[in-house]
Amino acid sequence: MPSTTPSLSILHKLEWRVRRAAGSPLGGEYRCAFRGRGREFDQVVKYEYGDEVRDIDWNVTARLGEPYRKKFIEERELTIVVLFEDSLALQFGSGRRTKRETLLEMAGLFALLSAGNRDRFGFWHATPHTHLVRQPVRGRTNILNTTAHLLNLPVPELDAGGEVDIDWKYFLRAFPQHSVVLWLSDFPPRPLPAAWGALSRRYQMIGVRVEDPWERALPRAGALTAVDPTTGDPLPFDMLSGANRRRHEQWVERRDAYWDQIFPSRVARLTVSTEDDLLDALIRFFKARMRAVH
Image 1 (cartoon, rainbow, N blue to C red):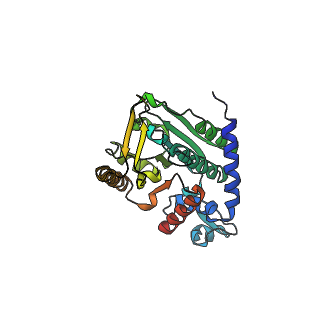
Image 2 (cartoon, rainbow, N blue to C red):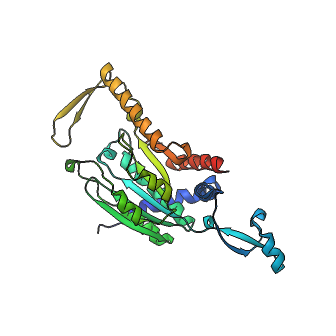
Image 3 (cartoon, helix red, strand yellow):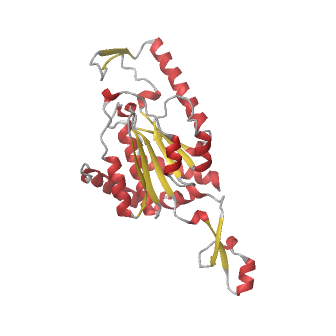
């Protein structure tokens, strides 16, 4: 197994930023954004100062002579699963970081929030030819080590080729029901997964899409010469060509249509750019979910 020291160092830096944001909506709204008020009854417990008055069970309170309240399943720990779709396209980046680096940082932020909120955290890492599963663990040290392993996985070889093919039947057996699944990908246009209905019923599915600024709008830089990484052949591309721009616009439309189809609810999806401050993007996302569930 490769050393995780560099990845742990990155996580510690991210953790410092998360702790600085503790007074922001990030800490508290993380839990509420994933739980909401659609709750399933679990048991009755003694009422303590600060508990919700509306959760008091008046029948039990009258029978026992002291206040008791209803406790709900949502108050238990969450299970957070990062589904990292490590496609070859994630290795593109026109600026200071690639799409892959951006999504890995997002995975680190979600892991740190899980650790801070005493939830369980695991991941499924999928490449064009392999997958790696880490069952959810609890506790800061275990979560940091698990996440460092994800961040330290080797970049898929470009000459390997192929698309990422996730074994959804295996995925459904790998993680417990009611888990929050954070699907990190660039979501290229393609057919919906055959198991999408089962996944949506079993899990709380959240899409996190990454895009590079060049994917949203081509730069007006004239001719660009790229190199095919598999053959080494030059690939001239005229940014100002009307035909190329029309093809690009059509691709963007197909990509956005697929995004709307698979995650029609805007509070079940988050799009981030390689140029974004990802912590700020998360805060805005949680605020939007909070407004939707309350």
